[in-house]
Image 1 (tube, rainbow, N blue to C red):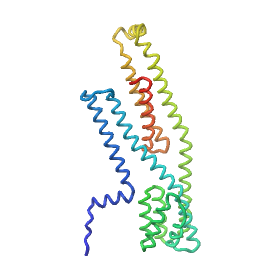
Image 2 (cartoon, rainbow, N blue to C red):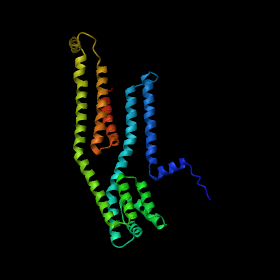
Image 3 (cartoon, helix red, strand yellow):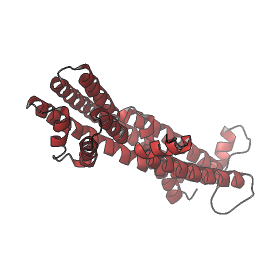
Image 4 (cartoon, helix red, strand yellow):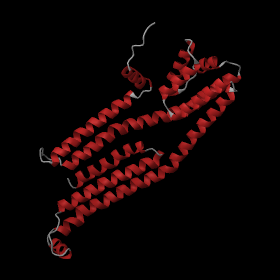
Length: 300
């Protein structure tokens, strides 16, 4: 009897490749390395070990931007792929139901449906057909398909189809219900995203209005208040003590804008589709815009 020499480590790697999570793992590693490097440079700059034109705050901003940029791009592409798959999958299920009603077995229905065109899902459906044509179990082929595609909607639908097939029920009716359910869920998600888009726009407008007001203060009012007669008048109002320099006040506003951009981005991501991971791309856009505007306008 041949022993199974596959180690748990090899099984883990195979599972990552099967579910296409290897790319996600690589993205997480790259993001973590970039963030760690910039945080380390920021700590060294804060301690005075390294100097230069870049301040320690900028290093922490670069850490945030590098992590958010790499992971945000991956997350955006991943969500777009999932959206395309979920919009096409009900058509495949509907075709299976029509083939079953025409008198085909489940295996022949899959083989017939694999000849159709389903966009991004076409290669995956052909893999199901190949696995079934080679004598594999339909259940195993569908489960492997759900693992490869790895979307919540497809996992739920495949589980429903398998349970109906094993229980001996009317699979065609179950397929119709599953396709209708998947399509309605997709429509509800699209409707929710459309309704919440206006709130995301309001958050962006509020963030940029706040940034514009702060930049106007830092370029016009604050220099007049801390310089010359304005400085003496302000010092008298504050009780005669020492007054903060323009650089200190500008730095305080700079940090306040960065925090406000980060918080607004978190809220925008949750409003967009209810997932905190969607905030990553908004964090990159808002924090980068804040950093760039301060650099261009004030050279902070």
